[in-house]
Image (tube, rainbow, N blue to C red; front, top):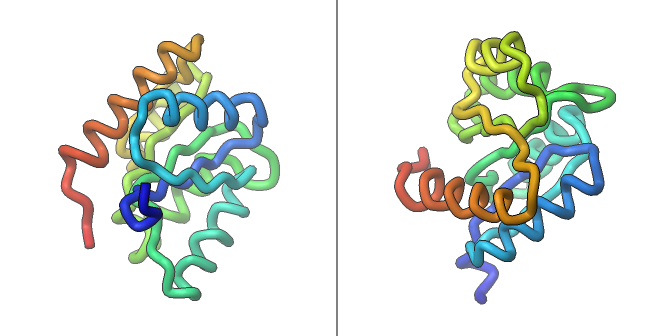
Length: 143
């Protein structure tokens, strides 16, 4: 597939196993994405700043874990949603936390969705397909 046809997704995740499972899931779902990976919120902000500086497009979607070293997902979300350039990028929380306080705080900080990490590769593949179908195919992105 032509690289220009691929949709860019930024995965902010510190767990190598979850990174690999997520990549495998999108591949198995046969959705045309290119996934960039960073390990925490600070690295995500740096990556996005570099993309803007180089004139390379922003990701169409950010998949964000909560519990990470250096800068967690909540702090990244707060900063991103206050930034004029970043706040238009949909952010989907992808986490294992079922804590009501995390769900509530994510939406309070303007997360676009809150998904629990699926427990199997089959469920993760289904999630990847649904994320693609809604956030890439149906939802209109800001230019």
